[in-house]
Length: 193
Image (tube, rainbow, N blue to C red; front, side, top):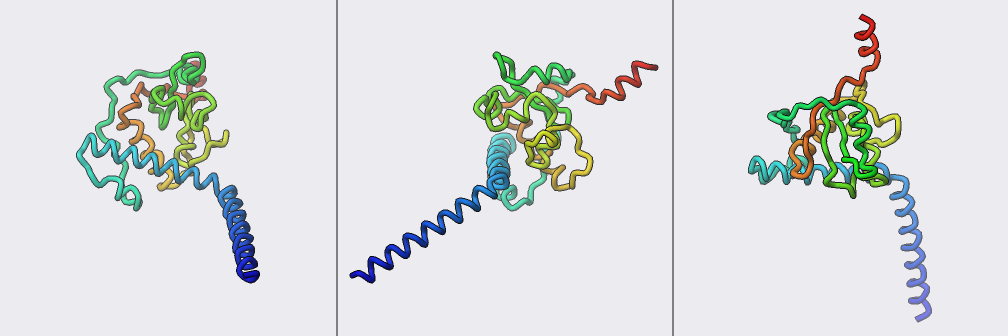
């Protein structure tokens, strides 16, 4: 009887240590886990859109094994408004403003999801700017929240296209238009001529 109690105590300590080690592992790996979860739920939404729009019942399977190509043909260009950088920067969800984000210069209204994109929410760092690089890298650090894609791998560029497919085909998000040139040097050179 005494031996059984010792074994129970030993197993409790073992599991306590194991849970502690696993908790530390999750804490350390959390940024990677967060990226994987974000991509998983993005792909679930993309597969729903493919089923709704194209009748593809098995899209999620190819997405989960990484064997899919983003669908980028025939997307909405009918509005084709030019959005200024100032307009985009003010569309941050504060004080009743809409919530817009931009990828590869394509501007989307994500106001229908304030719990994700609204001020202080998980993806709020991606709004009111062209954060193309962040979508490719899965990084929300300030140096990633830019439009520059120089140096990104083919895999990272494909991630960007997958995010574009999500925003183009999602039933809640709306294409607004294209972002005006953000290249200030070109604008200065053009004004000097």
